[in-house]
Image (cartoon, rainbow, N blue to C red):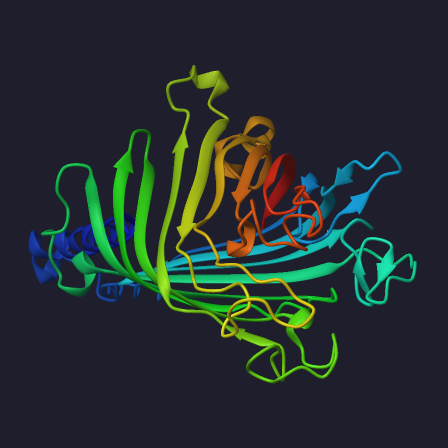
Amino acid sequence: MSSRFSVFAAAAAVSLALLAPSGSASAADLPVKAKAKPVADLPFFLVIDDRVTFSWMPKGTDPGAFSVGPDGSINGKTAKSVYSFTHFDAWAYGTNFFNISMFKSDHNDPASPCSNAGVLITGAPANCAGATEIYGLFRSTFGWNEIFNTHMFTMGPLHNISFEVGADANSENTFLAPAKRDFVAGLQFQFDLPYKGYFNVAPLAYKEINHNGFDQCGVFGPGIPGVTCIADGNTDFKTTWAVETNYYMDLGFLPENMQFFSISGRAAWYGPKGDQNSPLVGLGVGRFSTATKTEFNSEPIRLTFDASKAIAGPKYSHFVDLWVAYRYWQNKFGLDHNAAPGVCTIAATGQSTNSCTESTVYTGITVKF
């Protein structure tokens, strides 16, 4: 948001520079054809930043996707290739952020018609391709300092307070066939960190609608719509709370010839949103059901090396970034990693499927264009 003021200051400086000569000289001193140049209008978008990323996640997970080895061991890990496009812009009153990613899983997270690794819903063996998921996220902020034309909301390390709205959407070609649609609204508090860094905290209201193929009436017998199954498989969760945070900081304390590194990260908490098969509650025909738990989705730290700056100089800073990060996600999608029989645990034994908690180091390359 501070870029707005720097742009306005630059425009004001240009205006004064153009007006100063005519104010200190008479008309006779000016060339006959001289005309004052008009000040260029400020662009609608003060900053536009578009990037593409490829990353590799060796130990991802997808709840309920696991395989059992000959020795009885359970493998709930899924390697994923991730292809992403990210857009960020800043305008006079706020910011917009959009990300869309495609996750391509290995065979341990199978595409439909397999209901789990190596098997169909009937239990018959099958070798299905790895699933493909498309996930999009949008967040938009409206700064109070900018809306009310004041500096009242800048004090100490607090840089600004903003209204924040956003939405997520996904689709995946698994038997579950999730079709997540969630909406968030609340506030964002932006704090300054050293070396031109920032730390944002956003308390939000969260509402999710999704789809669950296992709840579809007819999968496990006719069922009773609205009691033991859902006619169209669409789940409708209760509105709950969320807190999203993110930070970024250059490692400006390093020697000048090593200032190519930065750290960033994020963490988000989403409150319980009702039964995992909402609006159904309890044990239905052919399905197990438990209450959702607080979901914790994080990337505590990402270390980025600015390769383009190191090779071509500051003019090309962050055109090509190489990075490594750690990702931790507990109670994935709100599912209780200690319960949720048939998904997070083996129904018959209670043994964990190791698929509802994600803990992995991953790495990637990001290119700005």
